[in-house]
Image 1 (cartoon, rainbow, N blue to C red):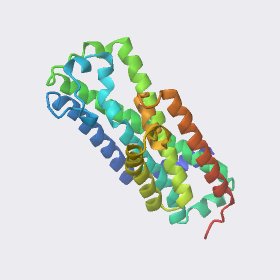
Image 2: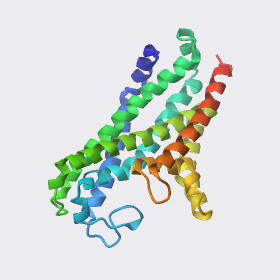
Image 3: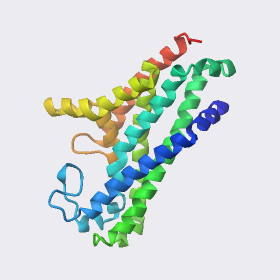
Length: 263
């Protein structure tokens, strides 16, 4: 299995994928963090849903990770796309057959690929967090935000919890992408379905039908990254997400193990 992990890591380290991924993650982190601080006095708000976050609020210990939290859900979409494409490409390019020649155990291939992509997602989250926090310090003076409490023990605890929550959220989205990649066996089909459902259809359904948001997988994945909300608690979102992913993973694992592999 270690060889499978290394083989998948070599694919993920391709310059075209690595640079584009981290450029996208850095751009999103910079954009959302900059909006919070540069539009702090804007009448239209400086946060999602038109909310206004004041300098006093950002001066609190949790102000350190506010920009990082905003980009959390979008890190999940990036992970969904990467996990889906890297999984489905094995069918598109016909490389799965070659992998099975070297490693006959299909489950070891599947688990090894997942471990490698999980490490990739972790690095992506750490990079996004580091970039967002560095930019927060750089822009704090312009927004007249005090950073005195950002180095306190409470702030470091919040930073650790936020990083863990966003990583779990990102991993949930990525796992969904891997499930779709195995189900559709096409990168375009898997990515299109995942993005369309999580970004568009879930929001439409939850807006039209009351109390449906707490049952949507994407909404619960995002809620984990936020640490819970008024719609659903953190533990509830963890439970619902686990149920969805376990059911989906079990289904595609059976399909992956029993499907014939084309030459």
